[in-house]
Length: 93
Image (cartoon, rainbow, N blue to C red; front, side):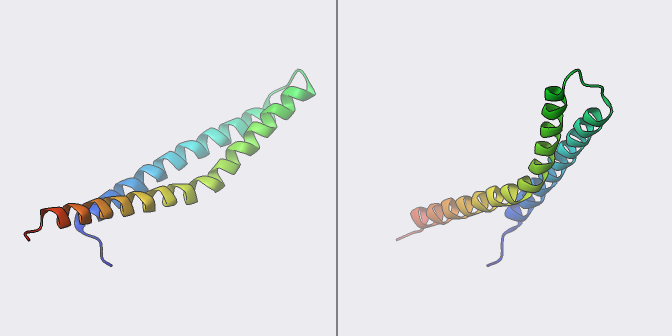
């Protein structure tokens, strides 16, 4: 099934937005990792906290792309369904 031009434009915009978001998240995760590596923590708990936060940030980078694509796919299906319903309700009888 081919998609019409507005859906392709929406897909491109969504993928661009998700790529920008992933880039920002990567810089944030890398900053946390560098901070936790070079800072002198006052206790072992603080070191473990920053290390866990850093690892969690990198885990988000792995999980986010499939979630973004899933949300994008659901959005396209909902748009296509609403367009089909509009066509059926406005078609002449």
